[in-house]
Length: 181
Image (cartoon, rainbow, N blue to C red):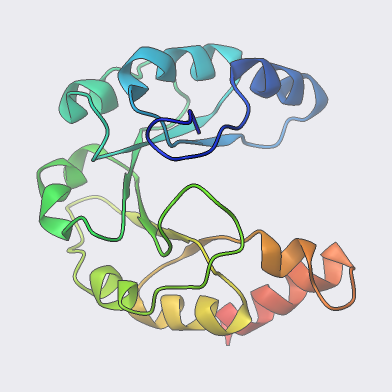
């Protein structure tokens, strides 16, 4: 987050580089920034395995998602709640993941927007497999609703870190069990 595209600021490539030294786990970076075309390569060079950029940001989307040859995976696109699915249709064959924001991005702890379920349902599957991820207000109940709508990747923050038991392992297992039912 850059404080421009969304009204908050988070970490940059140096944090990714530090995490890369500490883990071999995949690092998935969601750039909620105004100019992802300028910064995506910096995150990849720092160790990001996968980069997701917003279709609404100030950049040539096709050029940005095609410009990650050093990435170990293809690029992903993210879609904000007010943006229609039609904005990403020209790029579905060029990405491996579509992230549907289920809140207005920028702050954690927001309530899930149920109208985003219809948006998930309307995403056509391109010729190659497309993961549909969701981010915002994801908990066992909303996660299950998103599965039923077609999502298969879940970004959860508060429902895990503020779980009633304060046990992260238990919170993750609870979310997993609900989305797999």
